[in-house]
Length: 254
Length: 223
Image (cartoon, rainbow over all chains, first blue to last red; front, top):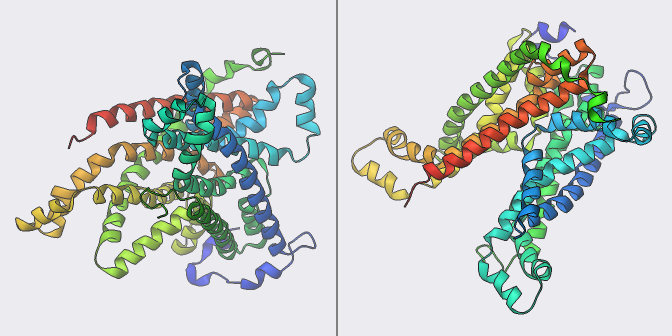
């Protein structure tokens, strides 16, 4: 492909109609590729986000408990998933983890597991983000005044009840802004899934660029799609933030 | 069948020199992008806070745009577009260095902006009152304090940057991860290599994060 490098910007052949053209080998158009890529990106991001919220909340809560062993285990979880690059984690989940499973399960994962790439990416991205969510949840719980916990215990709640009815409802409402950033991060980070062959947007962008040789149009379209998804996520979270504002706090409802 | 009967970690030792080359590029990329990113990021932050509206708007746009696209897309963008503009092919390594500097500048600029805004306004007025120009006030009064306040966060961002450099994998630049992959292929033992680099990344990042924690307590300004 030396032709791509031979000229300057003036020589680039623009072709905005490329999206409606058929791909080299097949009936679909390039637009079909991008739309299916968008679908996978959203699917990976949403599925991973639910795992991240669930496990992150659990781990974040554990880190604030008086039980030292539980808190230490939770800290280990956070440090483990925070200190290894996402891409390296993904390659470990995809190539190494199946080898560690019992023989039959290992064979099934390697040969028969449906949508293996998708589930691997979801688990990996979910756990990676869970460490970040856990840190936010912990910070949220620790930002509450000690009096809240004491009040809960004083009126006869058990510790789990105090968390369930007093601390967590407050903490979650306070940490919505940083959770919004994490939600947008998970959408952006889902692009790493291309490395194990999930057919998401970045994968489709690379494929379309090679297939059509119209790199700039391709990347512009894909960038715009990422932008739209991230922006919608941001607005969605902003809506939740407005609905759940806590009266009496800065930025809270009156 | 346990982990150690199946895996053969003896291939690590002979490939260490090769992995070291990869780690050197990862470190070089991290350090250049950190220094360049903090420098450009500070300029971007000053531009965002400046009273010249077009300048502030341009900087805001740049920062928001960079922060809303996946880094991988930015890496692919630069790798594709720079040769089109310069008219000659560019190595993946050079492209990676330019990309990371430009990308990290956006993130560092947000940190520096917060740092600048954390300095009491009276300090700027004091600088002006004793006759300092804008650049003098910034470089002798505001920025040193902003930098000190934000040092832990700047370093935390650098740890994230260090991890993110593994994404140059996408354009084939030879960093630590790529070197591990090549070594794994050569020895027919890719899995051991992945486990080993994961360990290397973990040890470096964990050690750095402990350092940041220590620094945090030391540099905190008592007001």
